[in-house]
Structure formats: structure tokens, C-alpha cells
Image 1 (cartoon, rainbow, N blue to C red):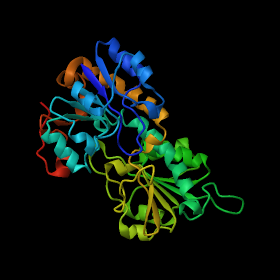
Image 2 (image 1 turned 90 degrees about the horizontal axis):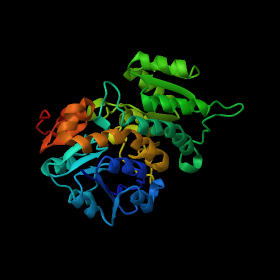
Image 3 (image 1 turned 135 degrees about the horizontal axis):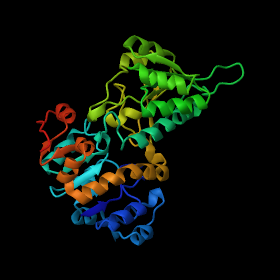
Image 4 (image 1 turned 180 degrees about the horizontal axis):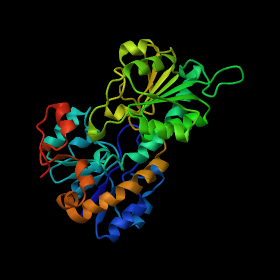
Length: 366
């Protein structure tokens, strides 16, 4: 199979879909790899390394798409890439289609086989989302603490506190992989940490790992009370299957929060947890609504592309190999987890949550 690795064009995105060592393994397995020039620069991999690994270096994204069958990216196609897609392509990347109706329509219309990293699932685990959730979770308290600075528009509270001054109150919503890692870092930074979640087992795990953290079973009332006192709110709610995140923070609730507090909305890829959330970029990461700062960067791990690219490609490579070795139909038949990743196939939406979100007809994968 011919595998294409284009340069990412999403704003402030410096990760890349495959490393030179990934390319070498794909070539060893008899496949051809086409890499756009400078695709790996932001992650510390240059064209010579890809070429030495056996890749063909081409100057433009158009060259990559024209030559390739399997397109491996990090983020969803941007508008400048829509015209490059066609029915001969299998697209393998993070898609997060629930809030992206236009892209969903394009992929359906062009009959692209679209496989989303975030819906590949092994029971309750999302193996291709996990490493990025870990990184985003670890970033979130650092980002929140930084923006609490008066010079960043925050309320001027130090996360660890100081003699005679209590630490900042950090509320983590969700106790999954991102939430666990957010709690870990926030506790380490000296914050007064509370984790709220819908089920007890994950809260028990948090309490066992971080005895100084507070844990609360979710209810609308408990969340509302915690939001009022929070300095940093970290949203790590994850809805499996690609559906949109629930809007747990309404405008009315927002008005009751502290002025200068901050929401770090990790869930923005799935539409965000607050009614006021909207995607931002690393260049302009924050906006303010009702006196509350919102950090809603849709590609948070892209801030650390060297770490993120290696962590991501370590887990995606086996699936890329399976697709390349067996083709889509064969790979999906052999691997149920990969089958759950198929969002669009042959002009139909194969993911029920995405079909419902946009009013498309849902089809079983056949």
C-alpha cells in the first residue's frame, strides 16, 4: 500500500502522523511511504531522516494525496485540504466529527473511508486517545496556574498558596485518564484539588493515588456548588463513541463563578463542556465570558510536539500496519477495535453518534 504523511496545516499544529522509525518499519513490510517536505520539522524530524528510512519526499500536500491510498495525519482535514480528498482515500487521524458538520458532509460526499483515532476502542479503553489525554491532563493545571496570574487576566491567585494564604481551588470534572493526570499534577503543584465524577470506582482510584485530593460523586447540585468556589476548572469529561460533550456549565452557572477564574476545557474537541466554549489556538488560547477565562485550545498536546508525536505514533503504528497489510475490509474484520474507528465508509455515516448529531442516515459497516 502507498501511505501518505502530509504536513499538518491546522493552526499551531506541529505534530506529524509518523516518525522516521515508523516509516522504516512500514517500508520493511513492503509498503511505500510518501512524506511531504518539512512535515516532521515541528517534531524534530527532518526530510533526510525520512528519506534514509525509505520514504519518498514530495514538495506539496497535493503530491501526497495524489500518490497515496492511506492518508495518516494527526488532526482532521482543514478546508484547504478538502479538495485533495477522494473516494480512493482511507483517512486515519483524529476526526472529532460530532461538532464538524461541514467536514462530515465533505467526507460523505467524497466517499472517503474515514477512521477516527478517538473511536478506536478496546472495551472501555480508547488506546489511540489515551496518550494525548494523558498529555492534555498533565498540561491543564500548568495552563490554569499560569493564567491565574494578574498579567494573564486572572484573579492573581498562586496555585500553591503561600504562608498565610490558602492554595487555589482546582476542580477536575471527570476522573478518566485526562482527569487522573490533571489531578496528579495539580496535587503536585500544591493546589486544593477536588475531582467530581459520575461513578465511584474511578473516584476511589483517585483517592487511593492522591489521598490529599477531595472526591465528589457527580450531581448538578454538587457541581454547581463546587464551580462557585473554584479558581481553576479542568474539564476532562469524555463521551465514548464520538458524541458531543454535555454542556454541564451553563451561562447562568458561569455568572456565579469567581471573576478571573479559568476553565481549561480539554473536551473542546467534542464541542466543549461550557455553553460559552469555542475553539481557540495556541497563538490566541484564551477568551473571557462573564468574567471567567476560557482556555479552549483544540490541539493542546501540539504545544509539546516532540513528546506528543512519539507518544501518539507508538500506539497508532500497529493499526497503520494492519490497514496497510490487510486493507480496510480485512483489517476491520480482523480487529473489532479498529472497526469501531470507522466513522464514514462508501458515502455513509457508520458511527451512530455522528449520524445523530448531524441528521445523517446511519449504516452498519458491511
